Structure formats: structure tokens, C-alpha cells
Length: 133
Image (spheres, rainbow, N blue to C red):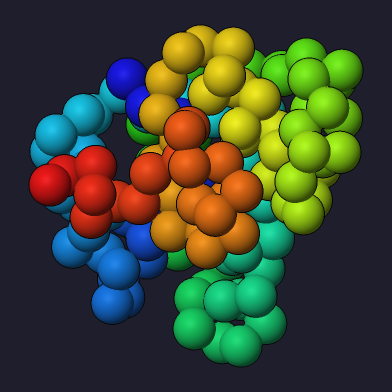
């Protein structure tokens, strides 16, 4: 099992230049976990596609349902104290630190392409390419 950030989830479900890397991650480990925050972030990602006319409402709802199915039973609320400790120890947002806090609590890698997370938390965060070797 891994912790996936919303960017990895987006790369997997929305065809783009990073989709192949996300597919390789899920081939290696199909059990993804995420903090509950991922749902709001995912909706925000899709809102941008809706506003740009790159998705219609029906397609957005299908993507929401597919992503929820992928993460069903593996959504968690990270410890707020740990999130804030990670904020103080890094240059990352509290949102990003939720992913790190969950990975820490579960003893799992956080698979992300976020450069700041990779730089600030090299012991926990790993890129999709490094994860799949």
C-alpha cells in the first residue's frame, strides 16, 4: 500500500504526460490510501477542467466515482498535531503535510511528483518514477 497525493490520482485518471507513470505505480501497488482532504482537492482539480470546457459535468462525476472507488476503505483523517509539526519543519502547505502525516502514521511511502514534498520529506516522499524503478 502507498499514500497517493491528489496529483498522482489526477495523473492516473486524466490522460496526460504523467499518466503512464501513474499507471506504472498502480501496477506495482494497486492499494492507494489518502487523507480525506483528497476528495476536496480532487473536486477542485475537476472544477478547473469543467471551467476550461475540457470535461463536462457527467464526465467529471464519472471521474469522481472512479477515484472514490479506488480509495474506498483507505481514506483517513491524519493527526492534526502531526500535520502542524510537519508544517513547521518544512516549506509545505498544511494540505500537503496531510499526505505526509498519513504516510508517517501508516509507515508507507508517499508517492508524489510534487517537487517541494520530495525535497522537504525525502525519507517519506518518493517520485512515481523512483517508486517503480
